[in-house]
Structure formats: C-alpha cells, structure tokens
Image 1: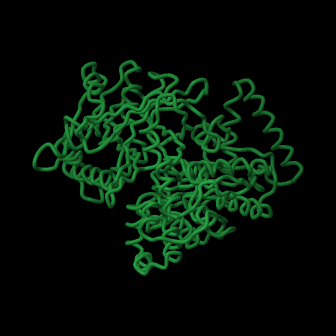
Image 2 (image 1 turned 180 degrees about the vertical axis):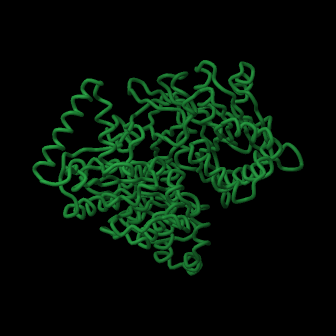
Length: 599
C-alpha cells in the first residue's frame, strides 16, 4: 500500500501514527527505506517471540495517545490560541495533532479519544467558514456515538451580538449529546479574550495529565498552522512607516475611501494575497478630550492597568476602546446613571444590540451623565483591539510595501460626527507617521494553486481590495487563467475604486470580464447580486469548467444576497432544487472553490 493512501481506517495504526509515519518516510531515500523495512520486520519478529503468540504491533495494542486540537477561526484569533496551546502541549511531552477544522476529516472523529476545540462564532450565530463542514456533520444523523471521547471547547464571540459564542455552544451540546465527556466546562470568551483563553489553556493542561502519558513530544500535522513564532505578531507588532493615505472617492462622494500604502522596510514581513493586515491604532485627541470633559475627569489622573501605572489620558488614547460599545458596558452605565430610559433599553436584547452598534462611549457620556472615577472608567472599558484589513497588494509587485483600501467609518448623531477608531487613524495619518502592524494569514482565501484555473471575484465597495491583490499576482504569472470581477458602489463618477487599474488589466488580458453595479446611477437600485442574476448562465458555465468563486465585503447583507443569487443560478442552469443547489455550493466550499472574506 502506498503511504499516500494509508489511513488509520486501513491499518492498525492511530491517525497520529499514520501522520508521523508519512512525515518520517518522506525524509529517507529508497535504500534507507528498504533498510528500515528490514529493521521493522526484525523488531516485529522479536516482539512475536517474546510474547509467544500471534505477531502484533506494539503500537496497535497500546497506541500512543494523541491530543487533537482543532480550530475554527474567522479572523485568526482562534488559530492563534490553538497554536499556542499546541506548543504548550508539546512542551509537556505529549503528542499533539493540530488542525484547522477545514482540513480535518470528519470521519476521523469517531477514533479520537482526546479533543480540544477552539471555535469562533461568525455573523448571527453562524460557524466560521472553516468550521462549517464539521459543524454540519456533528448536527447530522451521520455523527457517530462518541463515548470514548473526552473533550473541552473554547468558544470565541462578541457579546454585542445576540447569538454570543453560539457555534461553541453548539459544539459543546452535540459532543455531549453524542456521549463524549467534558474534561473542562465550556469556556466563553468575549472580544477581550486573552485572560479567559489563558485560564482555559491552564485548566486543560492540568486536566489531560492523568489521561495521557508523556511521550517523545512529537507534533503531527502542524503544517497548516505552523507553531513557529513569527518575528512580528499581534502581540509583537512591527512599527512601520505610512507612505500614502490617498482618497480614492470623488469630491462629491458621500463616502471617504482611502488607498493606504505602508512601508515594511527591513522587517522581513511576508504576506500572501488573501491575507489580512492587523492595524493597531490610537484614539483621536478630540475624542479623548470630549470624554474627559463630559465626565469632569483630569487627564493627568493616574490609573492602573494590570501592572502598569499611567495617566488617564494615555490610558484612554492608547489602551482603551472608545469607539465600540458592548452590552455589559451599557448595562453598567445604566446602573451608574440611574436613567430609567437606559435601564428599560438594556432589558431588551435587541434594543441593546442596536444601541451598541450605533453609539459610542462619547454618546453615553453626553446622553446619560454619570459620576465616575478614572479607575472605574478604565475598568469598564475594553482594551483596544487591532482592526483587520484585507490586503490590497501582492508582494510580487510591490515588494517591501503593503497596501490597504480603507473606508472611513463616519456617522452623524445629534449634529456630531462619530468616526471609527482605526479608519480615522489611517485616514488622518500624515506621510511618515508610524503605525504598528502585523500580518494575519488567511489560508481560506487563496488563489488556486494552478494559475490557469479561472476565478470569479465578487467585491463591492472596499471588498474589492483583495481582488486588486489577486490581479497583481496573476499579472506576474505566465499563462494565467480567465478572471471575472464583479464590483459595485453608489456612483460611477464618484465611487469607481481603482478604475484605471481595472481598465489596464482588461486591456492586457489579466482580467477577462468586468461587471459593475452602480446602485444610485439610475432610478432602480442595482447591486452586484442583480448583475450575477443577469450573467447566471455564463457564471454556471465557468463553474462547470472548474472556476473558483470568491466573495469579499459586507457579511450582513451583501454576502447573503450574493449567496442567494448563486443558489438561484445553480437551480436554474444546473437543473437542481433548493437542497441540491445548497449541496452544490457546499461541495464547492469543501473543495476550496467557494471562499469568502466577509465582515
């Protein structure tokens, strides 16, 4: 039997042993493999003689215990936690199998004995893309009984949303229903997840000690996650120089979209098209001043954050989240303010959610006065978290630079403009300003390995960013396949992002087809999903020829509308019903031919 097709189902080996055998065998030449064959045969015969019975493999009778760590991650946080845990498990001398849920063979689940799962929740209680298949399998009738499995789940989420940590709760419930036993209870983490995740890691490391013996500290199947610490990371960002922050939209546009270029210098930072850039930011001076003034607090007042003492001004400007609320903060504010109207609001989950999405701390301060100390304030606020932006460039073209497409988040409330923290920081940064950054890999938003494979890209608004990177990459490749871009925005004259670049790619053949949907340039609004419906037959033909399809942009409305448009064209031109059309797109997703980067 070829090692390429060897599996635990077809051998007396565990999956961890199969993976290690494949990895080990790849390091030897034919002569060395032949010698090893003889060595193993002799070892087996000695084992047989010593036991005085039928020849058996020692590993078959007492297989090495492997701790399987699976992660389902939309933004990289779950992958980071799982990778860190794998390193700690390895340091304890245990064998560990670390995998993305997208790469995990669901049929292997019935053979697991020890599973640690880290999974985020995306959108309205939905599983992240790389966890969809495993999530569906567990919920289906095909899921096996798992009485031999012991497990623990870490759930990541955002309490600003109604279905907080729902995917993790689903995993916990189904594993329990199938007979598996939890070694550590479900742990739910909010946006500021670090301390909770660290505590969970320590708990599971203690819990596995009596369940698994120390071995040779081997790690199998880490290629997809890589436990090697990067030079720069979320915790250790690179301080880069901002080269350009140039407005892309026209003077009369109702939105401000920037093309941002950042110099990577001698950092050695590498990225692939499809990756995201994490950007740390500082809050604006104006916003900090407004909050301090509204609360009658002195900027020089010293506060403590962890083990650090610093002025309240510095804490609010550099350490605390001021532009995004969360339900717990609004609930505490209602108690501090004594406001009956705010108390009534927080008793309704949906009203609270809408308030959180459409207000900032400064609005709370203005509308609901409180008497609060500087210490109380920083304790109530979440730490600043970096924002992730889809990278809009290919290193094969821009080399030691990274480009972003950033929409300034701006809303007017009660005559006051409120801005997004990171987008305002980038839009107002001057040439030469410092910005702390890191690369967040996205293994589930990649161009096909074969450059001749056709691609269909759907990216309205700033969702077009990664497709600019795709086209830069394809332009550097010989004989690249067909490429079709769908782009949408309100107005042709004001909002046609990177217009001249798309025209150049069409001219030189890098881009084969281009369809635009400028929604406000006619009486009837036209969006990208309408263009997809109009081009349904051609899209179906591309898909049948093996095209990969990509969606980037708004998850709340656009991605759902585009998905439904794809369902409809598959039904119409593929002669399928609703269920069959969904299964068709599911199969594309499983084959990595249907990929989304939505937010």
